[in-house]
Amino acid sequence: MSLELPTDRLLIREWELGDAEDALKIYGADEVAHWLTPEWHPVNETDAMRSVLHAWIEAGPNLIPPAGRWAIVRRQDGQLVGGLSLKLLPPFEEDFELSWALRPDVWGRGYATEASRAVIAWAFEQGIEEVFAVARPRNERAIAVARRLGMEWVGETEKYYDMRLQVFRLRPG
Image (tube, rainbow, N blue to C red; front, side, top):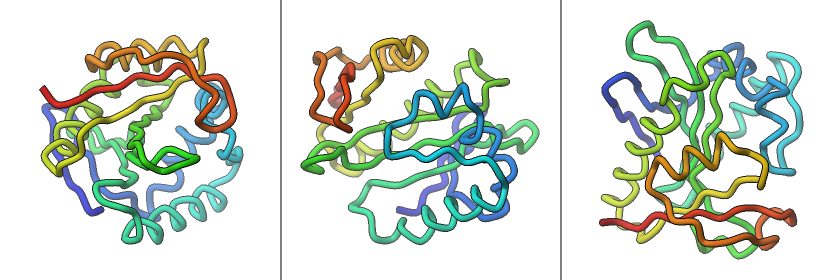
């Protein structure tokens, strides 16, 4: 779903093929890739990242709204600092999962929380009733972001991605 959503410091926008080099600083970083879902395959070069972005861009119109994948850009200087996605969780594709990934050099600045709040508010305006986030039990940064977003801890499950995950949920209001 096409989206351009400004926050105080950020712009959440569609991915572009020209983002490949900057996206590689996110999705190619070991510190980030380590925490991504098992379906993620490490990306080590710009051409491979460009192929991933191409696949995301092409898949976008076929996603069930309000699902999508977006770039997070710092408004101050136009630097791409991260990515967000809102997608249906496997295996039953009933629940919307919000996920985020940031360049390691910008961790700790509140960008994940700020961008996620904006996308969650927008998603609720689109009519979805709840948003989930899942994190590996030792991914303290992701768990902290989920808590800062006001997400409720639901429990632990192996339902998603065939691995043990902490599950968090947020409903409107």
